[in-house]
Amino acid sequence: MKAILLLFTLFFSGCGLIHIELRDITPQQKKTPKPEEKRMPKRKEEEKEHGTPLSVKMPVRGTPIKTKRGYFIKTSCDEFFRSPESGRVLYAGDDLKSYGWLVMIDTGQYIAVYGKAQKLFVRKGERVRSWQVLGKVGKQGDVCGIMLELRDKDGAPLSFELEK
Image 1 (cartoon, rainbow, N blue to C red):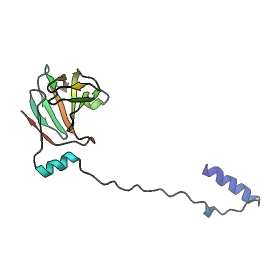
Image 2 (cartoon, one colour):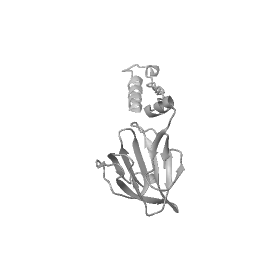
Image 3 (cartoon, one colour):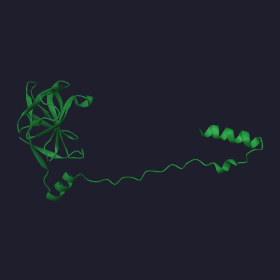
C-alpha cells in the first residue's frame, strides 16, 4: 500500500500537478511493550509466610521421583491412580502429546494434573469423590507410573510434598 502511494505521489509530482516532499511521509513508530511485573502465585506467598509446603497424599502406591514441576510416581503397570481429594474434572484427554492421557482436577485449593496415563475413567465436567479411581497408570519408556503436578488457579506450578 505504501509503495502504491509512493508511486502515485512520484508520478503526479513529476507531472507538476502535486508537490509533496518524501520527508513528510514517515513510517509509524513501533510501540515497545512494557515488561509485565512478575507476580508470585498466591499459594507460594502463603508457603513463604507459613514456611510449610503443601502436602498431598499419594494417588497410587509406588516410588515418587521428584521432577522439575512435580513427581513421577513409579509403580507396577497394573495399578490404578486415584484422586486424593474431591473436586471437578477440568480436562480429560490426550491433546498434549508430551503428557499422554491427562486429567486435571480442580479441588478448590489447587488444580491437580495427572499425566502419562494409559486409560482414563472420568470425563470433563464430572464431579469426583475423594479416592475415586481416575484411570490406569501408563508407561514411560520401560517404566510404568503416573506424573503428578499441582497448579494454582492461574496455572503456575506449586511446590509440594507427597505423603506416603
